Image 1 (cartoon, rainbow, N blue to C red):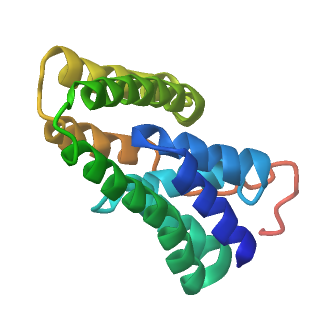
Image 2 (image 1 turned 30 degrees about the horizontal axis):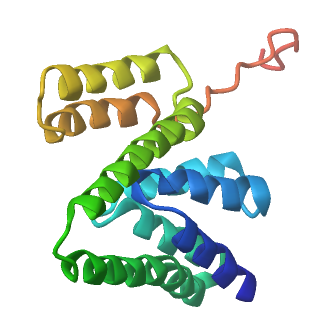
Length: 187
């Protein structure tokens, strides 16, 4: 349990913003080899479907998968508490000073880094998830709808997600073909 606490605590201390999934992947798949790429992508998908913050869901999902119910609780707390403490400290600093121009510059710089980390996450995780031309068509359609046409994200989710699920549904195995070379025993 100590290794789980250390891994998720480290992610909570060293990562921020929407790119935290890349830190999970680096720690759990590449560094510690606790999960395969497929297991990671499965967990990422589940965490995005569930309500609540994706990365918190991710910590609970992977902690539970690795060490059971207690592991889920430990992983979530180890991941969330460091960030919560830092936010409270930053809020105290931010509101405790009358000259907020320096803090505004700090937050703008951190925002730029968060965008860069989000792009890195797309490159590391997104390209592994899209496996064929149909997947890339869904990616492009979602991007066009949200970024270019300014459609609410809910619309592509309600239309393209069911299509993606249908396209990737498990298919029944084909019925075995009888061997035509064997002689029939029927008269």
